[in-house]
Length: 216
Image (cartoon, rainbow, N blue to C red; front, side, top):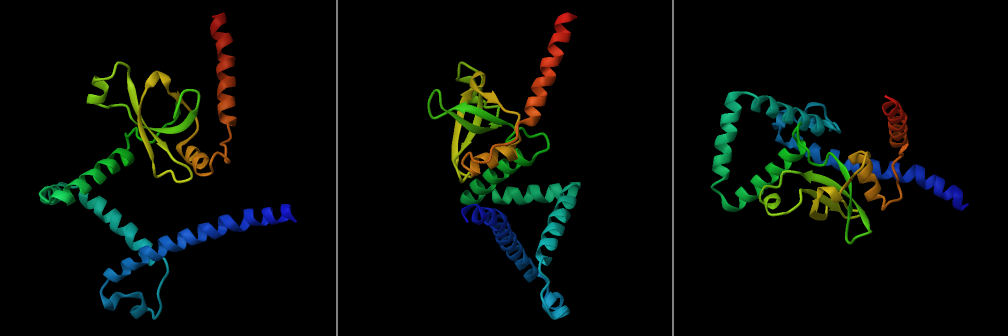
């Protein structure tokens, strides 16, 4: 009975949680239809609401904003808008901080949250999963003897909180697992361990190449 109960939970729990999360996101975005004039509201046009219409409106709005920002006029307008926000003390701090984080994470050439690491934390001999956030640390690097990298050590099972550490690069172990696999391992409290088949194949290929190099 216990085996069958667990097997049933493994089927329904992920489905139920996924459904609740998707419904909450879609329900939140569906409120965007309120920006439409009353004459164009789905309930007035068709006599009923259309689930998911807010998602389409959000995607169209983001795409339109991106296309507008790609031209010179759009860049000038956003520059003028940011100069206005820069004069508001509290808004300036929040807006600038959020924008810098988004640019660092979403930029095509960004290095933030692209690598999974192992660092000795909270003490020597104890290893924690971490994500590399930056290798260009400015004043911090200038005042440290060794080359350091900035890493984020998330807490489990909530990876949105954690600690920012400046760790000497020679003490960091770079892992081949993806960021997604690293997050799965953290959220599951270490229960979900990524498959290391690709890592073993990589090691085998390296081992096969080394004898050929030595013979040459």
